[in-house]
Image 1: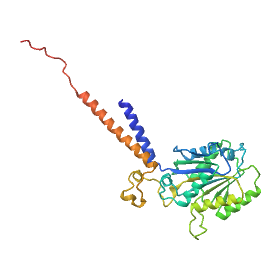
Image 2 (image 1 turned 120 degrees about the vertical axis):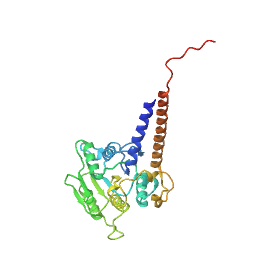
Image 3 (image 1 turned 180 degrees about the vertical axis):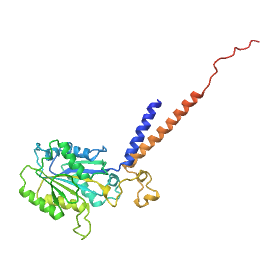
Image 4 (image 1 turned 30 degrees about the horizontal axis):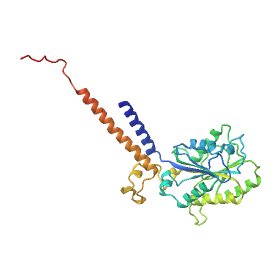
Amino acid sequence: MGLKIFVVVMVGLVAAAQISLASTVPAFLWSPGFSGIELKESVNYQIMSPKDLAHSVLYQGGWSDLLCSGRKHSQPVDLAIVFVGRELHSSDVAGNKHADPALVNLLKVSFTRSNFSMAFPYVAPSEVEKMENLLVSGFKEACGRGLGVSNVAFSESCSIEGGDFKKLANLHSIHDHLVSRMEKRTKGDTDLVVLCHGGFDSVKELDQPCPESEILDEVISSVEQLGAKYAALYVSDPFKSIHYPGYRELGRFLAEGSAGNVSANSTGCDEVCKIKSSLLEGVFVGIVLLLILISGLCCMMGIDTPTRFEAPQEN
């Protein structure tokens, strides 16, 4: 009995430590004209690495038919877009905290109105490698025989290792590249475009960085105006961002009214907060039960009964 309680306590401690230390980010996959599986909308609640995300996008989201060599889909897609943002955490989307409303609304509309969509709320990014590099290398590893796309292009703000890929400097160059590829590409082939937030100037405000919502909206609008079929993947990688720290302490979720979080103006507890509070409750209960068990065993071991008894005296 004591061993079982100890195992439960240790599992709870490990799980609580992993969730409290790892700040996760969301990822959204959608396509207006392509369906990788029969389900229209699905959500994968597992905590996964970027490599696991790449594998899920390929084989659960159907991108293996688009990106992997030697595989073709009955409904070919002209363009596969990967957009790596810098703004969203999983908790930001769940509780609408520190999130750009325009970006969240754009993702929500794209997700709900598409023929096929998937959500990955808990992706644990790496502190060492950039998300875009991990995704592309994950695509290559999961495909086995390499990527089978006809053309690959990246924005200059992306950090990609290896390969001689075309670099796109700004929104105008992205639009020109899309127009050029629609004219030159062979029917049935799929192009891959990877865009990363940063390095884009706002169209509305000169010398100001362009918001993610504006970049994503401009790219999607350009693709739709060209009449291209596309599939899009948005994933956030905010750890290199100036405005958002890489880690958030567990107290942010459990003590939202504390002095350090007064600016959040939030009194509710989101899904991540509830999971962590439940884990902590289980850990505390397990520790108390373990202490009671140890105390009981010590008391039982301390009982000293006499080794022999005197015979009763006869009157």
